Structure formats: structure tokens, C-alpha cells
Image 1 (cartoon, rainbow, N blue to C red):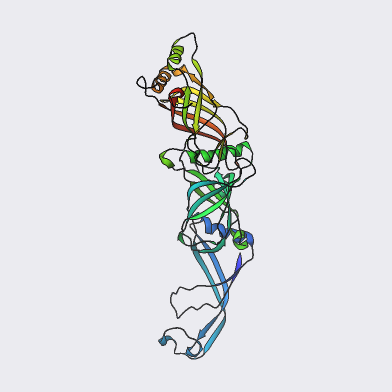
Image 2 (image 1 turned 120 degrees about the horizontal axis):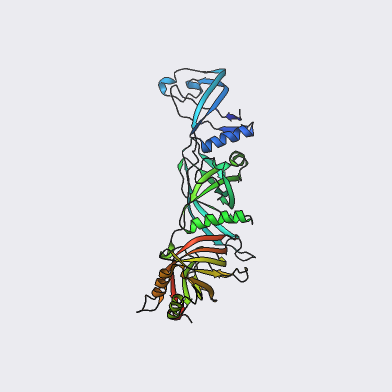
Length: 409
């Protein structure tokens, strides 16, 4: 037994099957049992509840408010039959996890006293509710967003698979959830990542999936509600969902590194590589153009990247570790910010034919193409939205040119 429902008088009609509504007040007697029922509403396909009551049945004649058809209201007066036992097993439909669909993640700068401080995180969501219940007046729901620790098997229930909490969000006031598919609604909050390496790595995994346009498995765990009744019922309930990857806006991609300008003399470099006495490594410098795929300020505090050309390793780029005061600051949605300083690049001749082809392609026309396209297996030390993830993802089709033929000073 989890509670008692006290209802107002309920008209039952004149026999046969009817549809009616029983309105009243539910008093919860045992919170733990009530929470089990609430979990069944959220997760089960269907479940059974037992109803038991002792009721009074009142039969009304035509002079006492009979509301049936004329031929059924021929009696006069009324009769009351107390002590009628009512017992029934009722099968109800559950929500089967509510089937949550998430929209794109948005990060928006907020006023802050520290570099790249807290940013507003905003996600649109849509929920399908196949249950027997319409959930009105839920008001403000607080939700903690976790990584899914059991992915990709998902054999464990969501509540037992909570990984790292990386965001805290809320629904808007007046939130309700009817039957069927809901309209899109917004949840907003903040990144909330503990400053532990493991948590930062897991948060970086979410951002890496997002930046490479891959869906990310997440778990939304109900932290509470502004309505005490619903808070008691739903707190701790966990729902699985996928955060979609970032869409490629501006007709481009989600690279942070977009262009490289190498300070290099091609004929001298080729001669050096072909001379067995001068070694197999070229030490050069380059400037890089950076973009910010986020809608919040991005601080770049360091970069290490393996340079790949036609699938072969041809070099290594390294930007030194910078403090927040020294970091490269990229405003929201910045496109092509050129670093004011040059950074070292090593070109390796371990795959000599590929490196020679790269040097040929970046040579000015008509000797070469004037540009080549490389991939960078990059580790980018960043700060965004108050968190400091290491973004580990491939920068694809980064253009490489010779600085002296690029028009740069």
C-alpha cells in the first residue's frame, strides 16, 4: 500500500461501460513504495496497481437529480447502499523511458570575473510519453546530465550507469508533459565539471564527439522539482538520450586549426632531405589560423598535433603550454584568427615520398599547386564555459601554404 485517494462523488451512469474521471487528493502513506510506482511509470511498458475501497452507492430517482435518459429516470426518490466493497486490478501503461530526443548543444557566454568563466548551456528536447498519465504542473525540473558509463552495451539500467556529471540544467517554469509526443522545450543551465583529471577527460569525450558530429550517449538524472510532490516521486529517475553532433555551419567544418603558413624554402628543404649527411628531420616555423566552433569564448592554452598527408606521418606541430593570461583568445564563432607568433614544426622524412609530395604541392605555381591539405591528429588544451578539457580530435583538410607566398607580412 502506497497511498489513499479521496475522491469527490463520481457519477457512474446507468449501467454498461462508461468513461469517467475520478478527481481527488492522493495522500502518500509509504514513500518508498510510492517511488517504486513512480519508477514503474517512467520505465515499464505496463504495470498493475490494486485498488480497494468501501464505498456508498446512491441511486437517484427523477425528483433527486437523475441525469440519465428519460426512460431510465422513471423511479421516484433515492436509495443509499453503504458498505459496498470495491476491489480491482488495473493495468496501466508505463512511459518506457520516455524516449527523449535532444537538439544541438549551445554554449553562450555569461558575465564572469575569470577568463572563459561559466557559460550558459542550452539544449532543446522533445519527449514521447506513451503512458496512461498526463503530468501537469511539473513546474521547474532540475536535471543533472551524466555520461553513460555502460555505453555501448547499455545492459545496466540508466540509474546504475551514471558516469561523470558535466552539466546541471533546468526546465522552464510551468513545465508539463502530456500524452504522446511533446513540443520541443528548452532546458538551460551550466557546465559543472569537477577539477579532476578523470572527469575532465570524460567531459572532453563528450565535446570531442560533439565536434566530430557524432552522437553522444548521455543520461539525464532528475535532481528534483520545485513541486515537492513531483520531487519526491521523480528524484533519482534516470533517462537515456543522445546528444547530436555539431552541424557544420558556414559551409565548413568544426576544426579549430584551419590553416597553416610554413616559413620554408622548398628547394633547400628538398636538398636537405635528400642529403644523407644532414639527417631526416627539418626544423621549421609556422603561423596557424584558428577558428572557434563554439558560441562561447574559447581559450587555446596549448596544442600538440601529428601531421598526416595522404595517410602518412610527415611531421609534428607543438604550441607551448600557455597560462590563461598568455592563452590565445577566440571570441564566439571566430573564423580564421591568425596567431601573432610563429610556432615550431618538425617535418620527418620517415615517409620520404609523402613528405616530398607535400613540399611539391605547397610550392608556388607553376612548379607546384601553391597549397596542400593535411590532417592533424590534435590534442588541444582549452578552456570554455568554466571547464578545461583536452580536445582530442582530428582536424581534417587543414590547408598548408608557404608563408612568403601567402600575402602575410
